[in-house]
Length: 171
Image (cartoon, rainbow, N blue to C red; front, side):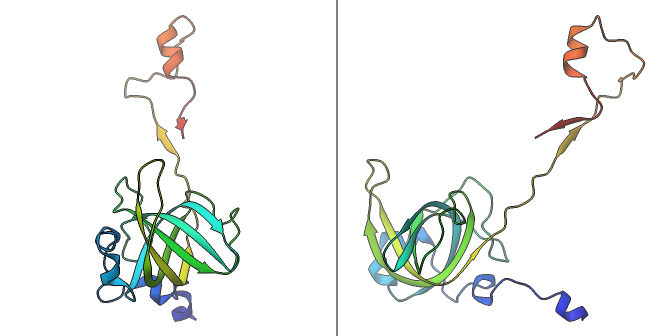
């Protein structure tokens, strides 16, 4: 039972990258060289388009952690399109959700972002994982060391404005 409790729900294809896993920016520059290559990429969903037999996800790529989860940072090596067989509900696979996909480079597609022409690498997805949102952490700020709980602040507007409640909770 102890070993079963340590088992991960993350598929092996998502947890471990393929041998020669190219990055999105590299495939964008020469997609024909990488057709048929297996890749593990992830990022944040930018749009969902349901076609007749598949769903096309536009994903803003992010660097991945060791477990395959997209990192929450402001850097992106580019965007890519991920074709998943079947129907994916846009309410579940919503914009800004984190996803990691494993698949094969299929080619490229030119599609503008606004008015900027952009070449997307397209991958045919074999396995994907939609990550649960991380819990929001509360940040508590306590008053400074000179805080006096018996100080009567009704006549001090600066004190009343900044020190109402103990502790303060920001989101």
